[in-house]
Image (tube, rainbow, N blue to C red; front, top):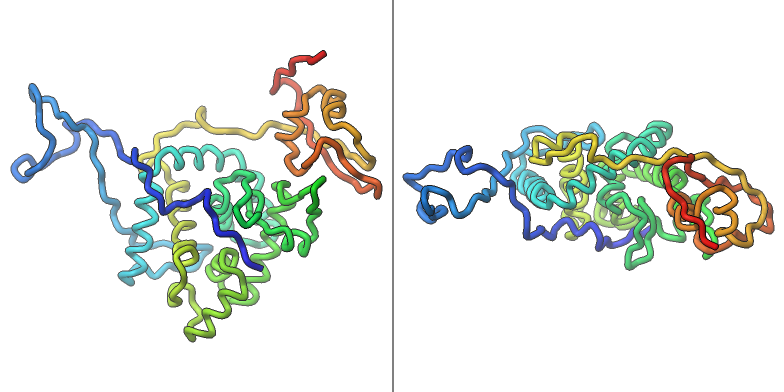
Length: 319
């Protein structure tokens, strides 16, 4: 399969407002060699913003597989992604907040399938942990194409699209990654194949007579793909190390829900929502896989619709 070319997570775009705010007194500026450093007015620095390089990493792995950081091109590619993501602060904070909300759902599914925990960061760079749709129509947290979703057992149509179902789409991603790992022999290559497609990676292996991701010359997107995952892993694993000051009170959290079994047609989801004490908006927030205002179910298939527990939303009655 061929996976999307992502626009949303264009991590190569550096945000203009990317700086760490520091007190000048704590910067330790070399005044003798400052040259074009900040001018002062009444001993107060005009420019209080400072940009710092990040130390090169000495050791790093993806899914237990070592990254050859001693090689100059690998070290520079890794450094690029760390810099881009560290100094894109607004995006970094959002990813940290969303990871706190959604990783507890993703992690046990990866573990159940024997897929390394590091692959949760793949979902981060694919979608920013949002139900987005790419220009190529890849959809959901895991950016799954329609044909692939159907191939792996998801229901994908105008009425129901399970690519928007976090648990089910994570299951599909796991199955795809396991097949890719069996074909290529490494989790790193499996991750690259998630981006470029298994056929695309196999062609490059054959043409270049190489097997390892780090030894193959690839296009811009796939060539940066693993390093983007690694950068997000590094930052989200230790946000404070990279200047992200965030506390538990700032995090997003999952609203507890109960599952309602439905094996019948629902003519009006607004009425269904109100019968369960919520409104249509809240119903769709918690069940984004419901794509229309009704549920077609002539086959009497079993669906489970999530209804948030009471006390989390204020529902104002509409007459």
